[in-house]
Picture 1 (tube, rainbow, N blue to C red):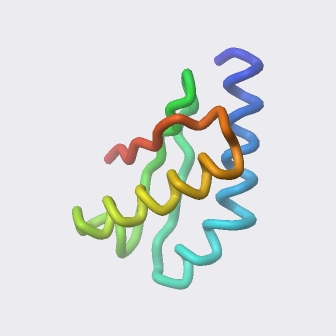
Picture 2: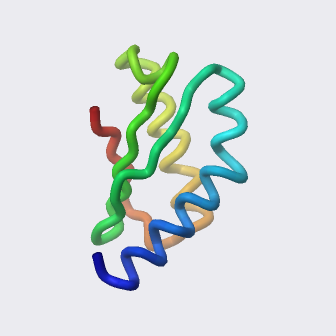
Length: 81
């Protein structure tokens, strides 16, 4: 992983841990950042949202919007199993 990708990953992890994660945890959902490459952030959702396709899409859209607002390099968020 390049230094730029690692830096982006660390910023994504920080934003999710400080801003997004606490709200998701209230619903019993956990989020794990797997990779950040070329502006694509791959995450795994666990818990309540991790098992329901409609919940996953709603969570991904909200998380993606928040990340893009705070970190302009993020172009796309992808939830992987």
